[in-house]
Length: 149
Image: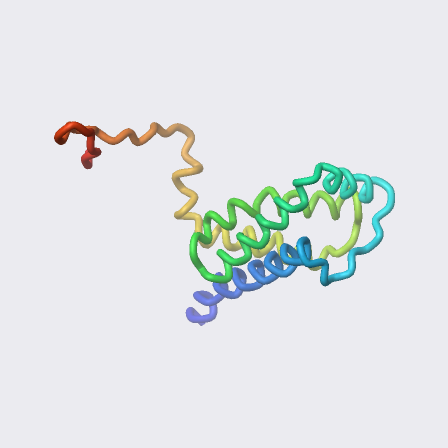
């Protein structure tokens, strides 16, 4: 039983990584058909496209995060980059284009499960007060070099 529980974060990482890699690449290569959106959903996506940069930046973020999740490198960074994307995906499907709740729910579940699994990496981000880490500099020759505090 313990081995199954230990493998769940890996499975969630692969599912989330694959979803965002595929849909991020689709933003550049257009290999999946796009549904015709009307009303507020169409206006929203049209405004994103009209910006000239936002959809490309969104697709690049999805591709980068998908690669990081699939590789297992910088997983907390990938989860942090994807958090606002996932919030907007959930809000889009709740308010502008209802439907696809299974996929949206799976993406949200994987993100939350992985954030919980990697919670130790987020501990310093969730501190109420923190101070900057300023290295102590000592002169060596004509330059200053940091030393461990």
